[in-house]
Length: 183
Image (tube, rainbow, N blue to C red; front, side, top):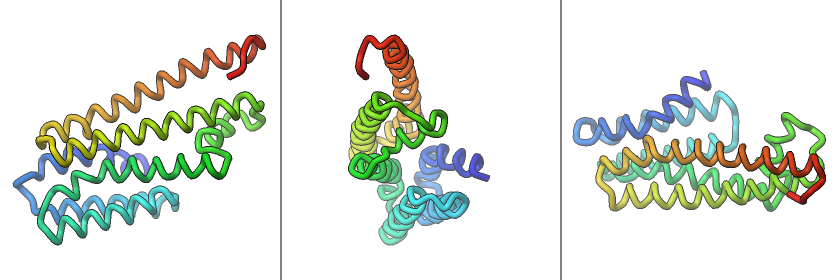
């Protein structure tokens, strides 16, 4: 079920794009809110609960004024929620990245914990930039530029960020294993 809901969330920008001028935005808002509620319910994850609440607010705003703008702001809201989660974990460790790392390696050395903190900070920066671009395309871009960024490029950038961090992590691990540096 989570896979289907995640896939539906990923194609959300395409649904909004296809709905421009064809469907009342309130129907798309209801679809989005329903997806987020199902996603939140399926995992009972606070992040998805926050996303569901935000989706409901954006849906209500779309329904009240009949505009697509609140629907186009959903990717910004997701970045903001993730930024809040990652930032809060910096204030109250373990960080999100450390928790993920401990799934595969429960006994992380202090150098690895310090590295996970840096990666968490980097993700926070990513969410700020991604949210800013999402907001700019929603507020000032065309429907095509909004779809291009939020439906494709943002996912490409997430993948590139993951890949870059994975390559860097391999180098840091190798350096730590040889004892030639501090990560």
